[in-house]
Image (cartoon, rainbow, N blue to C red; front, side, top):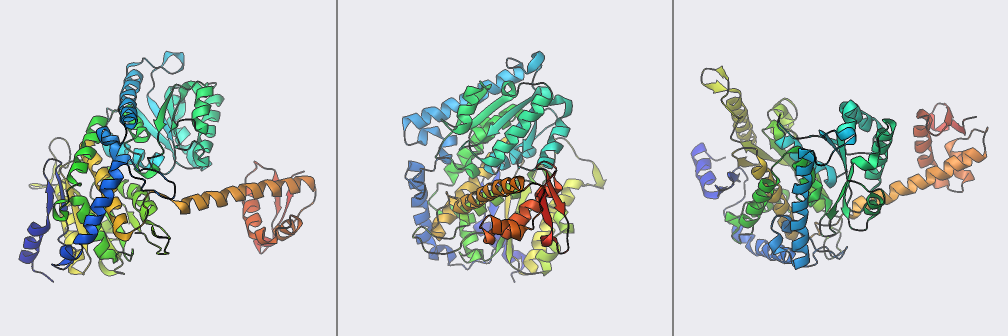
Length: 531
């Protein structure tokens, strides 16, 4: 173990600092050997070339035969065609114009009321990014308060609608779905529409769509004469869509400076295009991930932001990292089962939660601390002479970092001066680039998600099975059956467990009129269509 003086020298040797962004990346507490960068030079240079091709418009998502263009969102001039450049610039202008018209009352809710809230309906990348940015940058003077339907959980939607309460008549609804056919988002839209109608409100006069041209959602919005439609493009993935209309529209309505968001991301992109790995903070992250995981995901990534505003950052990164890197096959079709597990919450809360295991339990992780130098606007109260709550927060971070090192646990620290739109944009861009570079190092396609699609197909098969089961019970009204008997009658004995699960759920909810005659064990229960 190094002495403190040796660690200080190592810190100074490997620190990556971007003063224009107030950003620093410290890798000194990762135990890579002195020759590591030399050994990885060929790999990281290939990753730089791959990234250059991506930004130039190459088809880097071969499965879906798509370009990947989230970097163009903050630098439209780099887009491969004039049409894409014009579309991006026009979309940003239209978002600003629309938000301004809402804020100034040129676009009004019913009875000439100004909109004061927005309900964002989406899932995955259409919700995680907007939620993270909204919480990170919210103030007491926000132009509008944001709410989210980010699941197909009826109870969760009821909680949101209860929070909105009587203000539903002053709530704009944004439905975000790239394909326009995402079932969770469709369900949230239908639930929202029903809530508006229950209040005697015309949903279409409150609705805005963010989707691809000519999608199912786009056609619905056009037919219903929704207030507005904003585009998504096939070269943007959901997990990298925060700086498209998906994220910029809710942010602008909330009152966030979207120009600053874009500027922070754009400048971070410039810095992370550097071909010298030691001067490229995203390359440092990717190379450290490769070292600590053995390039095979052997350790989990624990994200510990010591700032309440950044609590959702780990949740946002879960999708960005795990959906991008969690792949069964590499680009050559070889089975590799790649990925990095991501979890985290916030400091110093976690020092009273799972940091105990990090210090003394299974050493199967690495930590990334997120340090924010500015405590708050204005001066702080002294909880002890010359000591503030913020001083305690930063010292808890440093203490945990030191304690982990003494136990042989590896960590990195990302430091930003303050949480503002520019720094949040930079963090988003930093991790997008790191994920892209790491994907090249391990030779996987970071821009498709076949596992997610497989889950959607399986869920749709369950929906179809449910319809068959309900139709059978309706035909046999007055008779009760076990799941095995129903599966046999439908000539699908292999589906008995699935039938038990769907009937167990249906019987607890009165929506489908399914009655249950309970038995022990529960799978011997009998079910029938209610008389």
